[in-house]
Length: 95
Image 1 (cartoon, rainbow, N blue to C red):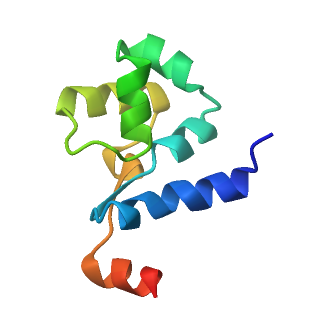
Image 2: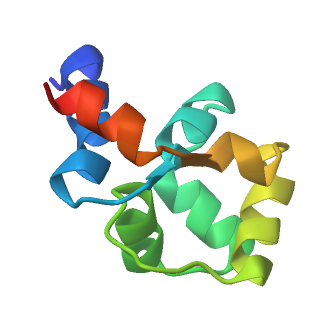
């Protein structure tokens, strides 16, 4: 059984580990809508592999059409999924 708190802590630390300034909160929005990766993949026509890479923050870019499709299915805004984490915030979190 996966401990949700530990999982979210790990996922939220990925941007720091990868030195990224954008945090991806796709997993949070999926949880709010109680939607699985498989279900979202089928609904928007994006492979589970690509969605998984996006969800874990292992991507360098996202197409606007993909972002729009995700937002439509999860009934959210792009800012709910993508969050800017500046250098100051990153450096204070790693201390």
